[in-house]
Amino acid sequence: MTINPLDGESQSPAFPIESYNLRMTTSTAHRRLWIETVGCQMNVLDSELVVAALRRQGWQLTTSPAEADAVFYNTCSVRQHAEDKIWSALGRVRQEKQARPGLIVGVLGCMAQKDQELIRTRAPWVDLVVGPGQLHRVPGIVEEILAGGPPRIEVSLDRTAGSRDAVTKSFESYDPDRDPTMRPTPFQAFIRTQTGCDKFCAFCVVPRVRGPEQARPPAAILAEATKLVAEGCREITLIGQTVNSYKWHDGGKTTRLADLLHDLDSIDGLDRIKFVTNYPRDMTPELIGAVRDLPKVCQYLHVPAQHGSDAVLTRMKRGYTIGEYLEMHARVSEELPRAAVTSDFIVGFCGETDAEFQTSVDLIDRLQFKNSFIFKYSPRPGTKAFDRQPDDVPEEVKKERHRILLDTQTKASLAGNLPFIGTRQTVLVEGLSTRDEKRAVDPGPDGSAQLTGRTSCDRIVVFDAPMRLVGRLVDVVIDAAGAWSLSGTVADGLAAAVPLPLATDGACGTGGCDGPGPIHQIAPRPER
Ligand code: SAH
Image 1 (tube, rainbow, N blue to C red):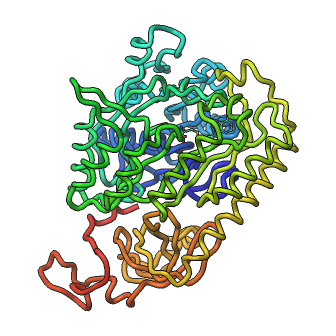
Image 2: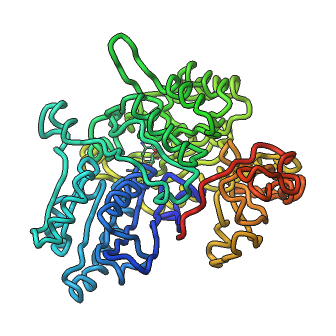
Image 3: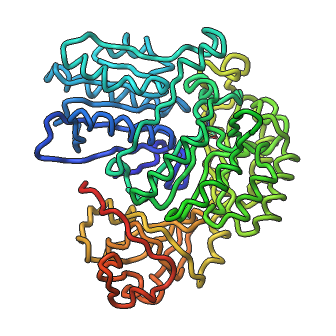
């Protein structure tokens, strides 16, 4: 798996915006699919589910578009840069399609919903255009195209094209059964709590392209979590555009995110629960209490502030003041003194003055977020800001403000990481570090490589260890800290961290039974 920050704007190597390819090779594959995923975790999950559905129809993933029978792009419309990337890719795939007319080219996700007809006129070689509310149709459409059917556009209703009920119905939640071999790591999974968004921030295209907010029933979320854990999943991340706005009414009972966390926390075999992304006003005392009291819930809260100025927040239609954000942050700090709070910021929003920009710098200085994703404002057709507020901050000024805010955050992140030196942290081991993945290191299961994992407060830790630690919780003593990661040494020696033979054999190897911290068996990693 390759995870690359898409536009170099966010300084942290993880979400929210990234581009990543799901890849798998097989010599026996009959029909081969290549899919590139751009955007948020929701897209990552959508790609996982589409690929799993196509695998059931005999498709296999391939490593290169050149040898694929179908090339899909799961797209993002949050910023222009994400769209430009797809337009360029569509230009490149045109030659491939000319050489091999049987190649199926698909555009899925948010751009498909937003630019449906434009894609057909600018890139008529695209065979299927399928919005995020219609993904369940992909396998059927692919079969029809293979059988000689015409190109297809399957999208949901525009938000203004009908009653709320009609528009809502046209965005169908796509949550079929999961295939553990399709996840980048079988021991981690995203679970959708709700689709769509009703916040309508002035800058944001998400409510338009992902439709009205719709909660999934709690029973479906719990059943999915239970099944995932039975398949070897150790960490679940609940995802929603504003996950903490989750609300499900059933008879006289209302279920909120805090209630879901209580239920998930009692699933045996699950180690960690995370949830993203939070809306500041919905950070209720009940939710903060659940994070405080439930041992499996990670003390990591992504709560985007977006800006430090009340005037800009008003123009952004964010629905809260900085005073309210500070009050929320103070409650979090009091109840959860160890929690890592992270944020998103937009620089160069319509009319942003130097003095207004400075308030964002001041907010980072004051609250010392663990990290922040920092974006230059990108006007999005179909949003209130696009229609009513001129994009009047010059690109050069946006760039400079981006640099300054990033510098401020980098200092805060480093200051937050330094106190970890000398401490012992429990880390869920995720795989090769970016360094060793770039070097294509293949140490085999016993050989040592530089691995990466995360603490429960979402800090990245790198350390040398054998690949068989992947998927396990291990303790690492931190010996160095940078702004974006920590590095360390597996605590108590590797022998104690890796029980051999596995406990399922009914025997304990060197140090296995007495080893430090919880160590778990996981399903074997799929061949990739
Ligand atoms: N609701 C989700 C997805 C929003 S997009 C979430 O909160 O994660 C993620 C981030 O992209 C937002 O928090 C915002 O900081 C940024 N963003 C959204 N629209 C943008 C735009 N038009 N220009 C620049 N950044 C934008």
